[in-house]
Amino acid sequence: MNIRLINITNDKTDLENIRRLYHSAFPFDERAPFDMLLRKAGRANVNFFSCRDGEDWIDFLYVVNYHDLSYIFYFAVDDSKRGRGYGTAILKAAQKKYSGRRFFLAIEEVEKKYPNYAQRVNRLHFYERAGFVRTGQKMQEANVIFDLMSIGGRISNKEYRSLIRSFMGLRMLFFTMRILND
Image (cartoon, rainbow, N blue to C red; front, side, top):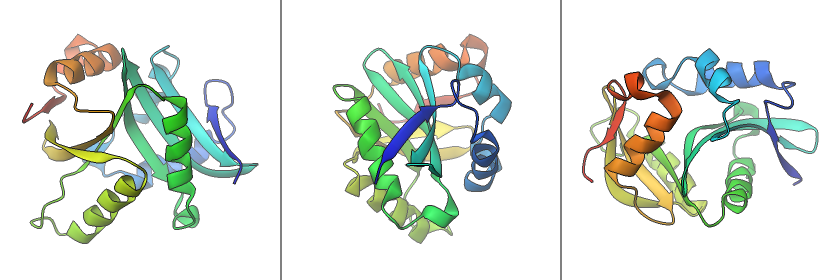
């Protein structure tokens, strides 16, 4: 594999593929407005990558940075590329890029009460194979509860809220996320 992370602010070639995948991979209640993500991608603390293997488009990765934190806000592999090791390869490339930082993400809460429990367990195992560990922390965004996973340690509620504030601004912070068990 020849994995490349291409910043979409420099190359918008894959933008329609990314938009399509974003809308199909994430439920409505877990999606920020795509145009907002694009606008914020121009900020110094945001990396919005189109990911390729050579010239073959694979997926996208959206990372928000704050001090020593790098938060995978969105990550999705194209349906036709899943199961081939691309997702793990992309995450390993990202880990190398963000080396020395606390690198974290949120996955849908893994509890038996959900109808897609098996899918959630598979997602958990995928991220564990890529080196992420559960922090034991839960996060709430609107009505959705997530489990936090990281490489490099836990994230405090204050740090998380500062990261989100740096990304979304003060007005949005009131309506957004919080760590439930800091």
